[in-house]
Every structure is written in structure tokens, then in C-alpha cells.
Image (cartoon, rainbow, N blue to C red; front, side, top):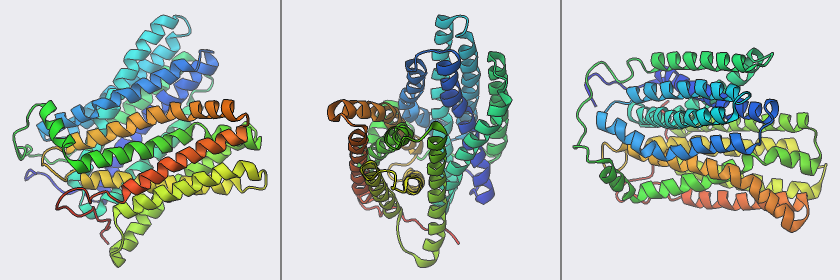
Length: 438
């Protein structure tokens, strides 16, 4: 670390959380709002926006290469700002492409492919380097809580953009969509630049601990670390289970409990409230850990996974019980378990990024980010497809959803078992302890 570098305290953590909020603000417009416009206003097949969103996930395989680029230079802020600039430009192009589809479908689709390519690369560059910066500059005792803070701020950015942006889009037009997206992108880029200003110090970065080899060699070195492979598998399995439930849980409320769209949407809000509660509880648990010196990150991750397993098994049982089942409570508790695990997993990434060979933090974080993104892309498609297949085989929506939820519960159980081994696979290195500074 250079002499001009400094440790990042709570004000700095909140500042960097603005980057995550900005990232979420642009992404929600591209993956949710434009998805709806293509399907409803333009009456295009759902496969079109679904493929574009999946493409932006596929591009996350570039995260290790993007992380390697920041390792070579030794500085993360150029990659954060540059990634956000790509994301903002991609968002504006996506809005232009969506508007263009109303008059020239092929031209709009071609531009959309370019736009979502920039979106995928921008998210990978900014998101990976942001987590590496936090991992390197935040004290180890604060990293799990810092992970909760930046994740909560991303959700806040999504919520504010959805609420305010939704009002600004009325009455809807293609031009208004472009204007709102451009305004959000410009604001996000400005906030990002201000947030990272001075975070790495004014002095030039110190030379890496060792000369950086070509990417292929650096990636091979990281992949050769057993702990890295183990954690990548944990991230993939857990996020596959997490994302697979996202697209089926609201249709489950409608198909099995016959709730109208308004009520099922409210239940999704209850679930997201549970996610936020879980993350907050994780931070509070960390504060207690500082006083009592108990627990570790792997224990908190395992607890979140096993609690998610129980929550999904409860959802699998709910349909056979019928209307007397406390559905709202189940949604909330499942969300809380998911939030607890997600925050602990991100904290673990930050703790473990520096374990092993030095000057490879960006490659490690990129590899784990790629595993997460690929799991999200696969899970989004697998969840709905599994319900359709189970429904065709079992002939009942109740049985179909029960079978799929049970399958997801198995995945979370496997992830819980994997969580218990985090840190133990690195020879001579203890597990990442979860201790929050008082």
C-alpha cells in the first residue's frame, strides 16, 4: 500500500455505498423497466428482453480479467469510474434501442445488443473493483458490516429509482424513457466520481508485491488455490438456489393461493423487507460478536443457508395446507434468511480476497463475481422452466411448486455444508473471523 493510502472508516464506507446505489439505479432501468416496455408497450415476445438480460449476465465471465486489470495497475478507482461510465452509456443506448424498436425492430435489437454488452462489462468492471477496494482499505473487523451497508445502499438505489423514475416516466414515451435514463446515468456517474475521490490517496500506488504475469498465468495461480475454488462453488450453488426462487415465488402465490396481482406484489415487498431485516440483523450480530468473541463468518453463512432451506421447505408445504397457511410470515422469514446469507457471503468475499498469493485480489473477486452472475443467469431461467416441467409431469400446480421449492431447499442445504468449510481449505490459514470493531 502506498504512503498516500488510508484506511476507510464508516463515512468512507457509506460514500462507497453510493457507488453501489448508483450501479443499482441504472441496472434496474435496464433489466426491469425496459423489460416491461418491450413486453407490454411494444408487445414483443418476452424472450427478447430475457435474452438481453441473460447476455449481460453471460458477460460477467469477464470479471476475472477486469479484476486482473486493476491488479496490474494497483489502483481501483479508474476501473470503478470507467465501469460506471460504460454502464451509463450502455443504459442510454438501451433506452434509445427500446424506443427505436417501435419503428425499426431489427435496428433497435442490434443497438440493444451493443447496449447490453456495455452494461455487462460496465457492471463487471465497477462492481468487482469496488469490492476489491473495500476489501483492501477497510479494516478486517468492519468488512462484514461494510458488505451489509453497500448492499443495503444498492437496494436503496433500486427502490428510489423505481419510485421516482416511475413517476417521471408518466406519461410514457420513448423520448421520456431516454431522458430519464440519461439523467439517472449522469447523476450516477457524478456520484461515483465524488464517492471515490481521494479514496486511494494522492500518492502513486506502490508496485505490486510481485511482477504481474500474463492474465492466463495469474488466473491459473488463483484457480490453483483450493480455497478460491471451494468458495466459487459455494457462491454458484447458493446463488443458483437464491435466483431460481426469484421468478417463481410471486407466480406461486397466484397459482396456488389464487391471490390477485396486487396482493402477490405486496408479498414480494414483504419478502424484500425480510432481506433488509436479515442484513441489518447481521450487522447487529456482528456488534454483539465484538463483545462476546463468538462466531465466524462461515457460521453466519451456514446459518443463513440452513434457515433458507427451512424457509423453502415451508413454502413447499404451504400449498398442501391451503389458505390457513401464514403466507406473509413465510415470505418475510425466507427473505430474512436470504438476506442474512447474502450479507455474510459478501463479507466473506471481502475477507478472503486477500488470502493466498498477493496482488491477486482483483482476479479472486472477479472469479467469485463471475460465479455469482452465471448462477443468477442460469437460475432465472431454470426456476421457471423447472415449474413448467414439474407441472407437466405431476399435473398439479401445488405439487409442481412443492417439488421445485424442495429442489431449491436441497441446493441451499448443500451450500450450508459448503459454508462450514470456508477458510478451512486454506493450508495454514484460519477461517475468516467475524469480529466487528466496537
